[in-house]
Picture 1 (cartoon, rainbow, N blue to C red):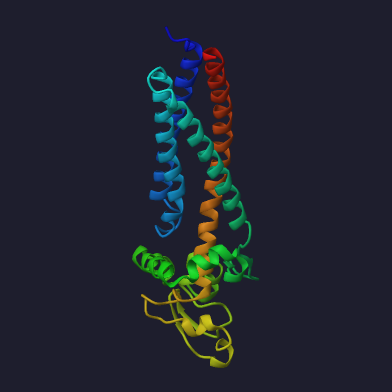
Picture 2 (picture 1 turned 90 degrees about the horizontal axis):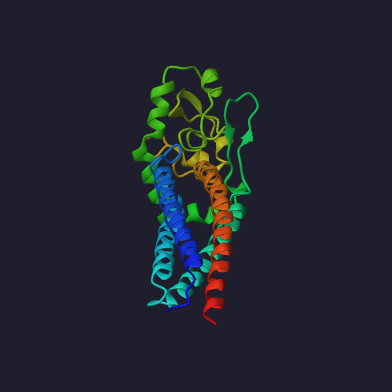
Length: 271
């Protein structure tokens, strides 16, 4: 008869059932956040790490549950489970630190008399800048922005307001950076997405001013201010996720410690 301790067996089984339910919760939250990504659908891919984390945790918890229930026949399964769990926690900690590091810099700057902020690409972390400066990545994001009709919605909402009233509207980062030319370009306001070019001497110094076009499929989608607006949107999205990761890691570390204690008792009983 095996000396396997039923109490420790039950404890490991219960812990892995909790982890399994926890992984399902993480998956659902990741999918929910992805489907309801802030402002546009264009930052959905930044929630993928959360979804993959939930998938991996689900697989690890199943491994642990099988190892706890069938330890007599699969004694190595619990060793595999504990190694995988350790790697999962380590990867989660590294990703959480990374998420804090890359989202710590950047943010909008207040503009006197305006209801919105202005955004500069150079204010954000180098890693985020490299993501949007990559032509392949940016072309995908730009196409997504056009298809999501962020600027069309801005026009529909404020098409009949004067410049002074429009200047005081609380535009979001993508509307500010992608749907209108940067302030100081010397353009004359017609409506939120149409501006007449006048003072070349002023706006030629800013490459974003030269990038602006009244074509609704171009607007300022090639501007650095647009990239900065997208990054600010991503930064706020990641801020939601990173605190959730912190809570997940704390809970997993506690459960892992309890599981290690139970597994140690199993090994002592067998010796």
